[in-house]
Image 1 (cartoon, rainbow, N blue to C red):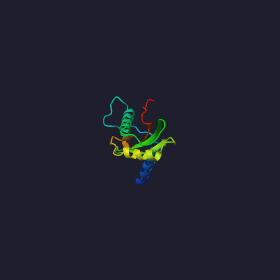
Image 2 (cartoon, rainbow, N blue to C red; image 1 turned 90 degrees about the vertical axis):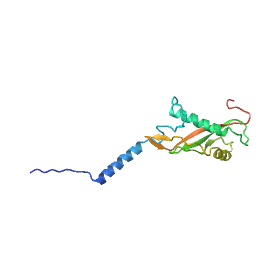
Image 3 (cartoon, rainbow, N blue to C red; image 1 turned 180 degrees about the vertical axis):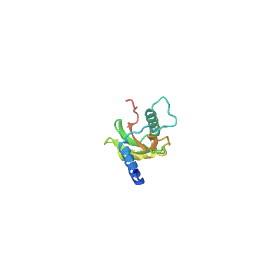
Image 4 (cartoon, helix red, strand yellow; image 1 turned 60 degrees about the vertical axis):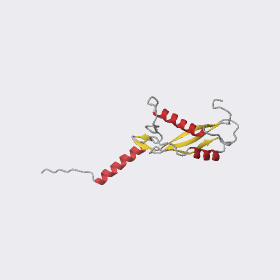
Length: 152
């Protein structure tokens, strides 16, 4: 007598196994970094992805802020750190001031930044494993008294 016994996984077992594998891969995923930085349209191929992104982001911020002066008294050059996000469809947005000196009026500066950084351009979003993702960046910004230059 010949008896053949085979065991097959049920669909439920296959689904559970797939969910376990997906969960393990997600836990191993480093969500603190991106594989490809967001890209502005005019990025030079000779620059690295991150260098080009930061260079263009800094130029964009500088052009928006250098157009006028603020009616705020400061005695010496100082800096603040602003947070910007590039969402998964590539829209850049100003989020908030994450750090600034105590003597700077953070609420006033934040309201100015909200106005200055409306309608920022759309760029190619960051990628993680080939998928567009949102990413946030901290950018230092120098504030200085009128009549001084950045290299002082």
